[in-house]
Amino acid sequence: MIPPGSAFAALLKAQLTISRATSTLVGAAALRSLREPELDRLSALMADASSLHRSDRVEPWEERWWSTALPKKPGRILVAACGAGRELVWLLERGWEVEAFDPAPSLLAVARARVGARARLERLDFARFVDEVPRRTRVDAVLIGFGALSHCLSDLSRRRLMEACDAICPRGPILLSWRDGAGLRGRGGGAHALGARVGNALAELRGVGGAWREQLLFLPHAGPTAFLEAADLQALGASVGRSLELRSAPMPHGELVASRRARRGRTLDAAAVELLGEVLSRHGVHRMVARGGSMRPAIPSGTRLRLARASSATLGDVVAARCNGMLVIHRVIGVDAQGRMLIKGDACSAPDGWIDGRDLVGKVAALEDDKGARAVPPCSAPTPRWRRGLGRVARAWRALR
Image (cartoon, rainbow, N blue to C red; front, side, top):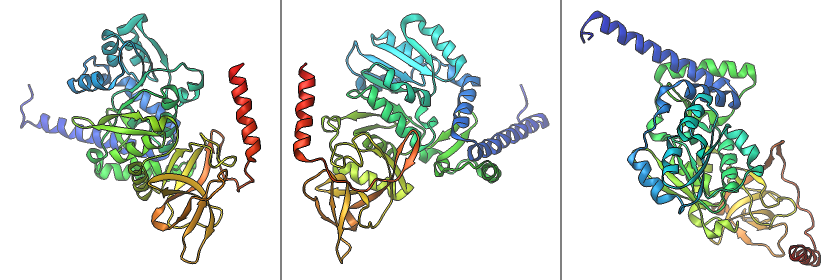
């Protein structure tokens, strides 16, 4: 037992303080100077080395959450970032079928030892999972491991992860928990600020950047971590046609639920439009997926869009705007002397009507795919109605054969 007031106790306390400050400084420099795949590998290494991630305990709030949010048994659940497998054991013991993945090899070995051959486990990170989704079978629900969404670091990566989860689980819920931005904001102190300055200098030399890094902190037990707020999650869900059913303490968590309207891929409701406007005003940019065919051929359904904050638009711009309480992404085909804009879908026969600056949510800055970003194509002549009719007849004929 070390006496509390002894010189040795004071020395030990000073050593711990210096160790924490050094870890914070190095971590902050890494956040600014490493590319996202490098930060992902660092997260996996730190999780693999930590004893905190090997627990088999399931918290009472998790049991209550999973019992009410997951679909009826026997359903198939995908556990993303499963760690040492505590969620897998709980699900298997209660009758669900399970498959899972995690990037940390020693944690995955612990999980395999716990569940044996009862579940299929793979070593994957989020990026590889997204790439493999077209080859995977569908599941009834997705459960993203404890706080793991905060280790999907950039806005674009979280969007791609949600698109992948929505594709593999189009009707079931996506359960997730995250690190609360209100609780993490302001941590780090002088060591974090110094590390950030060092990291910025290294980033300039390496050609590394990205505004999403402002959302990150380096936690000694968890590595690179994005702090998120409920509005971020609501907008993330809305971008794939889902609503967030938010649950609170002791850790923010909830499920993204696909409504019947959202599954048909039509429109976002008024509340989601307001949330999208709030996210754009706060972050300046947001990514979402186009739904529907009103902007074909320039923007087919399923195209990833980069929206930017905007207070005005010019002729030919493609804008996101409120129209009849819903969000539409259509082209500006006219501007009057008062600055009002007439918008219309490229494939639509009639315009939506006039909107003003208050109805403008944002502007489509670019279209994105795996090869990068490209400019929004100009309006081309829509397909004649008779050709669209023949196309529908042909598709119906192929379906009957």
